[in-house]
Structures are given as structure tokens and as C-alpha cells.
Image (cartoon, rainbow, N blue to C red):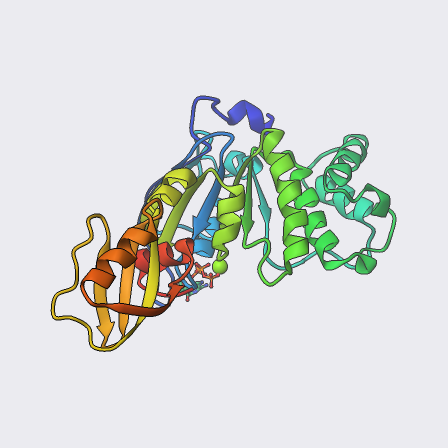
Length: 315
Ligand SMILES: Nc1ncnc2c1ncn2[C@@H]1O[C@H](COP(=O)(O)OP(=O)(O)OP(=O)(O)O)[C@@H](O)[C@H]1O
Ligand SMILES: [Mg+2]
């Protein structure tokens, strides 16, 4: 039976219900996760260190046993039909784990063989996947000689050899420089356009913003926010400034409708205002109240701010 025969086209790509994970050492890594990812989505699981991202991905890809709850991949229940569920999922681990002395073409064909795909089919697929990952011209080179970015793209090509309907990546770009990340983004965008649902975990807010249509933010084993990326960004339509002032601040600060003004210390104010609000009006009101602003700077970037607001920590 093929993997697709088991999958139900009307089901979400992923449905997680009441998922908990307690490791043997007593750590409660997941505390009741509910999550749904639509077919075709490009979904980010965003969260600080130790939030539970890898645990969750480990469970979905059958590397880690869950404690309670259920996971369905395209309608296939992970606990009742583990083999079928596994065939629907492709995993790109964080660490490079192929044999550096093999050639990309052999790495892909052997991987397919391990999953019971015959050699002729595997060769056709390997060419397709190496081309999609912009690695075809490297097919017969020793993998050790590939650049860091190419090695990571090879990991993606390898995961695609089984034609998974759900591709999961655990921090695919951790610690790699921006050029390499952009290369990977292009390959992932192509794979998603070609119809594969993608879930990735990341620390990089910018990466989620660039790639993903929907995002869940996980912190200490719980989902603290789940929304379309666009909506999430819209809630960030507030910009924060720090104003350095000269002289004493008046007892009463002016009220500026729609904005908030808070005294941080004797010479510093914090201003939050909607992005669309003109700063001139703010300065006029401050001047009339006798506040002399010497300089001003933006407080931080918006996604960073959201993260801190939701999780209470800097990442
Ligand atoms: N095999 C394990 N045994 C015991 N505890 C574990 C194990 N793996 C993870 N944990 C703990 O579970 C919690 C969640 O870890 P997890 O690796 O899922 O987080 P993460 O979000 O992937 O973090 P990071 O961003 O650092 O990769 C942490 O407290 C971690 O120490
Ligand atoms: Mg992790």
C-alpha cells in the first residue's frame, strides 16, 4: 500500500490534540498542545530555547514517544498506524548526518533504497531532487567538498526522496550565515509551491516572517499564540521609542490619544504609538507641556518585541 492511499485528502496535514510529553527524568516538555496545520501550509513553530520544539517534532516524526494526547498526519493516527504516518513525513534534522565520503547521487539513491524504493525510480527522483535543490552539477562529487549551504540543501533533497506530504525541519538554518539561509529558503519555497506542506522550527523571527503563512509560538511546553503571520504582524503595529529629555519632567505628562507615554526615569520617557500616527503631534503636545526632547531612538524591532511580550524573555 502506498503512503498516499492511507492519507485522507480532507484532513489537516497535522492535527495535534492534548499532546503532553514527560521525559523519564521528570521534565514536562509539552503540557497539552493543540495544533492544526492545513494541507499546503508553510508553518512556523517559533519559540525560545527549551520551549519544546524539538520534542514536538520528534513526536511527529516518530523518534520520540508521546505521553498523552494524539497526533494525526493527513488523518492517519500516529499511534494506531505508525508505519503509514511515518511514510507521510519527511524529516530534516538539524545536524548534517550523511556520509561525507559518499556522492550526493549515492546518498539519495541509497536512502530511497532503505525505504524500499527501487533503484530505477530512485535514480529518476534523485535527479529531480538534486535539480530542485540546485545541486545537480554536484551529483558526482564527494559530499565533503560541498559548501555548508550545499550540504544542508542535500539534507533537504534526501528527505524529499520518499515524497513526503509533510516535510518537517528542525532549525534548518541554525548557526548558518545569511546567504546560506537565503539559498535554503528558496529551495523550501519551491518545495512548498510544488505541493508539500512544510513545518519548521526556528529561533529566527525573520525566517518565520519571510517564509511562513501561519505561525505558532511555543513557550515552556505550551502554545502561547497561533495566528496567520499577517495577523500577527498587524498586532505589531505599535512602535516604541525612547525619548531623552532635558530639564525636569512636569508632574503631569500630556495625554495623547492613541499613544502611551511612560516615565522611565528623570530624563527618559517611553513612547508607544501606532505606526500611522504622526510624530509631529506628539512633539507639539510634549513641547506645550514643557518637555524638552533632546534625542530619541526606537526601542527594538517589532517581532522581537512580540516575542518578549508573549514569552517574557529575550531570545
Ligand atoms: N531526551 C530528553 N530527556 C530529558 N529531557 C529532555 C530531553 N530532550 C529534551 N528535554 C527537555 O525538554 C525540554 C524541551 O526541550 P526541546 O529540546 O524540545 O526544546 P526546543 O524548543 O527544541 O529547544 P532548542 O531551541 O534549544 O532546540 C527542555 O527542558 C529539555 O531540557
Ligand atoms: Mg530544539
